[in-house]
Length: 491
Image 1 (tube, rainbow, N blue to C red):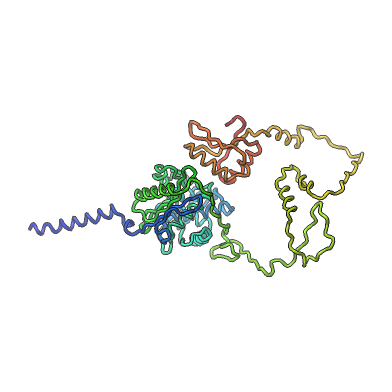
Image 2 (image 1 turned 90 degrees about the horizontal axis):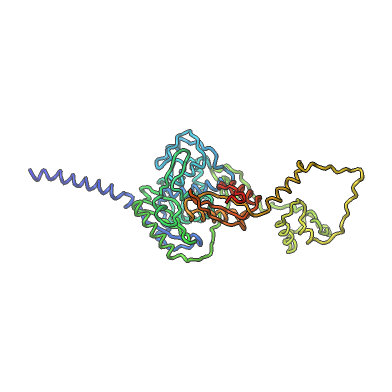
């Protein structure tokens, strides 16, 4: 009797042990291969790699490419951040992680971007793909074209969210390249990947990698991923003392062990990276848009116009240019059909440069160019007829008088602009640097200044004229960067 009673007990213990193993040790831990790569983001130099070129399931690291293509589309005017996107049944039916979108509802593009970048929402990613290219399949083809242009040679995308699909594969090296391009090609959007929380159209979303962001000094992104086939993946970036390291891990066993491994790899990167090195920004790929590959051929699913160039008939007739002011006409005319290609000489280049940098308020030829041109007899103006009377405008209504008055009161460089308030001095300084690099034309010569407030740290540019401050703000706002002018004495 005792022997018969032990048999059910033994089978019960085996069943409990099996369940315990499934709970404590996820299936992904045994199924997902490990791969890693560490890169110095400044130079692109690889500091550590292991199985870095093995094609594996990227999971939601895929969304880095999804967002890159969306940023490209916004930058080139295909769509705007405020465009309302109608959610399809296909997008609404995507499995978690998701924002919980309903079929037929409309939501602004900016909220879909936040949901995909911060919460890693699959429904938002599919909705973004359909908004840009009309279908997820067409968007995946565009992702692959972009990946090829970025140098991601061993990556193939099948969808916009990263859920496991046959043939949807990438490598640790390619995903590190992807993260580097996101940082350098779209710095105005990179802050999305460091937000702990954000508003996604009335829903508060939380960053999937907030633990590493909070606990690793200098960490500011980028993207996590998990599926059973992929394991726990992560591409992370951190900056310390002017050094920036990007590390990618595939096949982590859990969130905690993956984060610990990434922190170890980032430490390794900072240890091996030189303190100073030349900044070699990755080349931004040419914009191809919906037209396709950018080589004059149409691509299935693309809706853009196809432009074909025929080399043999590219130029059949060369029209002679008009005589430049101050230049002598040619003594012997040349038939248009035989006209040679004109190449600017050194003098022409110098004159063009002078014209480009001229700040004359008149739309006429610049004084510098005229001074450099061969002297010509001065033409005296015709005598004004005695019958012609000059109308005298009221100074209060004279538009020229108003312009002169405005210029005379704004010549001093006592104005500034504010580009936001941030929780730490480090973050404010970082935003100032990124903004200065992004808008060098109008902010050149300005002073970056962080002002401590009771509510945070203001990021300001000071030492601008009123016109320069206004122009800088308008240009930054056009790039979706927060900006407000600061009047003299307002800093």
